[in-house]
Amino acid sequence: MISFNNLGNLGRLANQMFQYASLKGIARNRGFDFCIPPEKSFGQYDELVRQDKFNLYNVFDIDSKNNIQMQQNPVLQERMHGFDEELYRSCPENADLYGYYQSPKYFEHIKDEIKLDFTFSREVRDSCNEMYESIHGGKKVLALHIRRTDYTMNPNHPVQPLSYYENAIKMFDKNVQLLIFSDDTAWCQEQELFSDDKILLSEGNDVDMDLCLMSLCDYHIIANSSFSWWGAWLADSEKIIAPINWFGGSCIGKSVQDMSFGNWTWL
Image 1 (cartoon, rainbow, N blue to C red):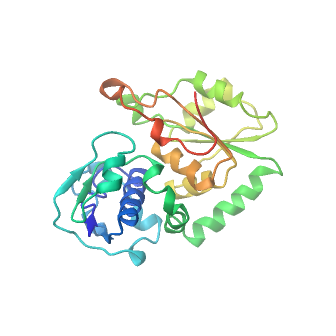
Image 2 (cartoon, one colour):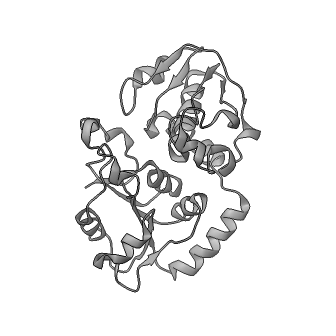
């Protein structure tokens, strides 16, 4: 049985989704059982997770579908950012995975199963479907994600410049309905690029609502963020634009090519 004892201690919801999906994908590929730790262990070594009320357990119905336990296995750490094919093909049965595992190649063979696992609650789905119906007006909806708050203080994750979003928007039909998601809506409202009255801004929603609403959109301009990555993946997005300068600072050399899927364009 393979495990991921540090699930919930290496990043918030979207990171947890990658770790869970990759653990399950690796286990299925190798023909092994797998287990995940109990929710009470989440945030034990990660203060951001401890302070965040949204995690894998309370956003999705994860606990009823899985073997919940800690397994004392030797730690097996990912060797790179991206898809580690050797680990995927030869992971031993008694491994405890450690890392971020940010590539859909780990779980694309069980895509439908992962989508079922990441089903939002009926209450969230109903609310988001109602919002989406009031938004699209018969048009295709383009989700645009801007992440700023924590990135302004983290050189390893650069805030994307307005020019990235301006150029990305030009790659879509002018008749699409633009819907902006951001952790800094006040900043978005100050930008001339988003001043058109037809542009809508998602405001006042919790994390699970925004992710669910993003998953209903047709097209996606994502930030260098696993959150909007999952919004596009869950949507089976028809077209995704992503920033090539995903990393900065000491992480600038990390490859991001294994993160792409579907009709994906790096910009």
